[in-house]
Length: 279
Image (cartoon, rainbow, N blue to C red):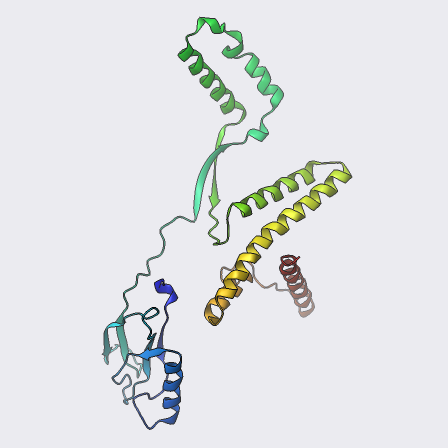
């Protein structure tokens, strides 16, 4: 297992685990032992005595993390009546250095005016020169130079920064669904015929639903694998509700009525969005 899948619990539990006559502490010890945890602090962690600050790790071999160099410092330099429990874990918490965005260069070929391009091509040496006067290598070189010059004029290279999609469920099927959705949306905007627009709107909705279903399918599998892991489930749910990354905030308002109406609209849209994944 990866290190981040192994559990460490630490802090001020406020149970006198060193006192074998303390009934509450004995119940607490029985509880964490029943869940497979080991407790590593054996000395007092409070100025009045008592082992109140604990470090717990899972005891089985596959899930355990070795706690190394555990020390208790009574001089913490603060006004706290608890001591500092210092220990080391053989893990690395270095953040990924992989950039969140990447720059791409491309030509916007769809913006080329075909008629203007044709006129410039007809005036180019590719048309005006006698090809028999050129050697093969010279003809190939001329071909590339003229076309590159024309492309630079009619569809110059542009650079844009794109945010990388780090979703674990994102794959080529998702990419195709998003491309189809965007294509249908463009056609829907530029098409004047009502029947064609209706078709493109249905195509757009279908592509959008397919993309959402792919995400929902992966999320469902993720939640199924997290049975019994409350923290992991909470994190996935927070991500679905956009809490963790702050992508959206709960609506507000200038008065109670406006807040109530905004909240109603917010949750209506959220419910409809989630329901469409199941249809």
